[in-house]
Image (cartoon, rainbow, N blue to C red; front, side, top):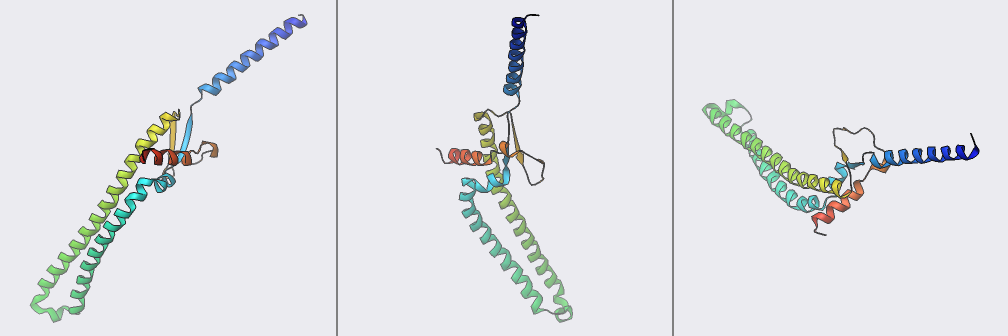
Length: 173
């Protein structure tokens, strides 16, 4: 084989190798990662809602504490059931009524928390979808408190870019 033939074969092999590398580089899935907790805490919507949420919860905590104080007063006024005599039934009825009110208030507080969180997470998820599409991602992983993502190379972490994107979208920019 002549040296020209060898050179042509080498060039063809290099071209084929380059095409294969380019094909695998450009056809590999585009994957990124977002730290959901950091994104949630950095979301302007959450910061705005936080003020109203804290005010609402503070009012509910005060109402619950008032109920609990009434329960303590009832207990302090009647140190022994013998002091109550025939009023024991009324005491238990009132105490149980206050206990139910306190439990209802706690459930209401839990519902308020879930409602606020769900609104924020719903909006975040919408933005995650558009962020992935706008950035040509085929797969967007998110770390939750359950720890479903065990390792992500730091070059795949786009949390800061997502937070900036999300807040710009939320603020209409």
